[in-house]
Length: 113
Image (cartoon, rainbow, N blue to C red; front, side, top):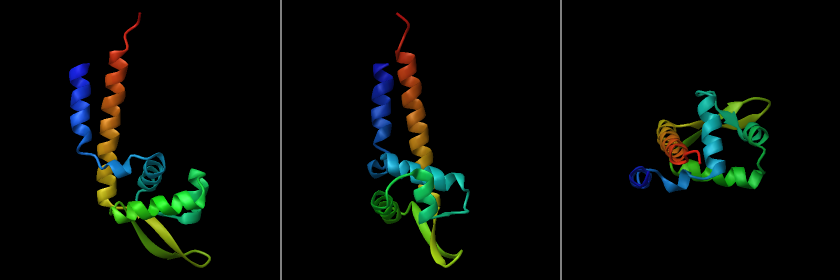
């Protein structure tokens, strides 16, 4: 598996290291699952069960990277809705594929004793 692990290390260079945080991956995953419907800050906070500061900071980083966009919607009052962008979806797919390879590689590495 050493060769496989070295390949994974090389492939990891193509990933944006700023996306590899639990909060950011969860935000992108939820927005991706909503398929363009978007979610308000309040909805994301409730769904992800993370505090406001962590959510606000991580949405800001994702917006800076171009992975999340925002739009104004009228619910009870004017609110901001967040959506995953094409770039965010593409990066999430790359991370998904890389993690799958890593998990598969590690499970093949462990042989019954």
